[in-house]
Length: 224
Image (cartoon, rainbow, N blue to C red; front, side, top):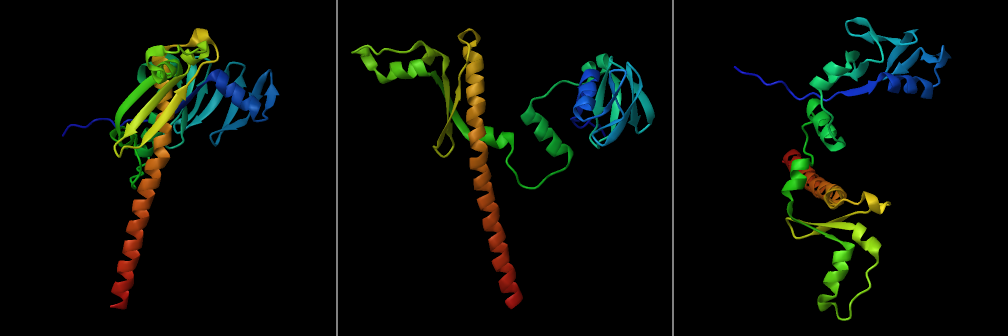
C-alpha cells in the first residue's frame, strides 16, 4: 500500500506576536517582557529577555525570536525554527483554512462546500461603472458626462445554475491603487459571499423536508 500524508492546517505566530499577546492579556511585565500568561490554554513563562519556555507534549522547549510558535491540530503548541517552518508550511487564505479544518475534524454531515459554490456558477461577467454608463448610452448621442471615479468601481455579475444572479463590487480609495485584475478578483469574492446563504437555505430546506418525511414515516410505523 502507498499512503499520502493528510493535509494539516496549523496556526502559527512569531515571537513578537507572542510578546504582544502577553501584553494584551494583562501579563505582568518583567524586564520589558510579559511574564507567565496563557496562550491557547497553555501557560507560557519567561526565562530571559529573548526566550520563552513553551510546554510541549515532549516537555519544556525554548522559544527565541528566531522561532515560530505552532498550534497543532489537537491544540498542542511547540516552537519551530523559522527557516524550517517556511520550508514546511505555506500560508492559505481564510476560506481554504476553514475547509481544511472541517476536513481535519471529520465533520462529515451535509454542508455547502467551495466546490458546490463553483459548480453553481455558470458564467461570470465584469465591467466598471464607467463601462456600464457607456453601455447605457449607445452611440453616445448625447455623449454622457462620466465622472472619473466611475473608472475605479468594478462590478462582477455571477449567473447561477438556476438563472439567478448575484453581484459583487470593488472600489479603491486611492486612484493610484487601482488595478483591473485585482478589482475583478475582489468583486468576485464579494459576489461569491452572497451565494453561501442562498445555498445554505436551500440545503437546510432539503434537510428539513427529509426530517419531516422521516417523522411521518416513524409515526405511521408506530401506529401500525
